[in-house]
Length: 439
Image (cartoon, rainbow, N blue to C red; front, side):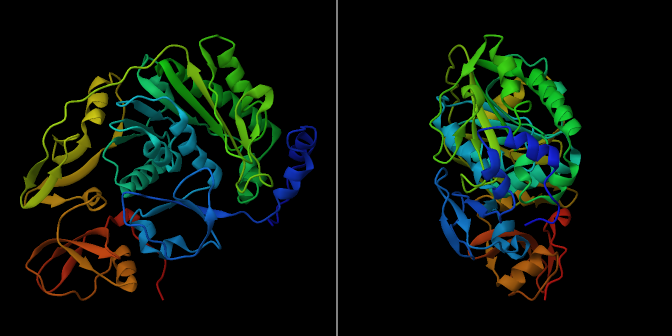
């Protein structure tokens, strides 16, 4: 239970709202669950005990207790992502949509990235995504999480959604996980309680309306809008979508929502409610733009191998290597196609997998590459050594010929080192390093 009481005005509003009522008020003082979603691109291994599966998302589990994720090397390697269970419903919802191969999708307010990863995992083959975040610091966190997941078909950008306002009929799916008043986080975030007031709800609703208006024209005929918030009030949720529906261009898309969720007001969307579902609070809805979508095909090439000063990169039929300035990128062809068609000046932070940087001494592997199925020689290490590596430290390792090697823990890549024969340089990204003291 949090020491900060629930805001009185919030309690009054909920008690007047029949779908929620007193059971929600009581549940917001209970202990929240911890859940994780596994990355199927990597060896499946957890070092802590799971409780039960999240019923609406395969390969997702509740944990019996919350561990210290910072001290688990597998977390840093992208083997799993700690995510609130209700947010994982994005996976089930995207799976239910009739999206064609070659779809281009946008997560417009994407940081920290959990819904981006769930959305991308649920898409058909040969799709690509743009993950956008307006706040620079949060955009960097988004980049980190997308990188650790090992995705070659996602570009990350750092822009106001205003930049998308003139992009017409471009995306097959737009996800707006809108900034909100955070009522659904009252159980686990004391700041959400202390910062909430009636005025903030109204300001959030106004900002959400601006974001929607900036993005609505970018959806193709037949495409979808997924709208989500972690709040309960009508003005930030159903009202936002009623204004879209009133214009006649969109309609509510049916979805068999997970058991435990409840329908939204006026049949719009669904709510995950603490006390009813094993999750925090979430509103999620999907609208369909009238019309039909067409599949986008790409030309597949035979698998090949590209070499960057001794670094051999396997290029699969759906992938391409592009060099931008001094950085070589491995990305899906459909992502390249999408970026070539974007005629707006977005600020991109990441495009697919950055595999190497050309320096005065030749090509240097980049950390993105280590987060994929890179074929460089790996050096297996203990958990203590893995944590030392993640802190940017060094430790004794077997002698090897000088060059670049992977550091691995439980057969999972953690990152690169440059072996100097008797010692090594730690190449783990400085901004990602563990700062916690190790015993």
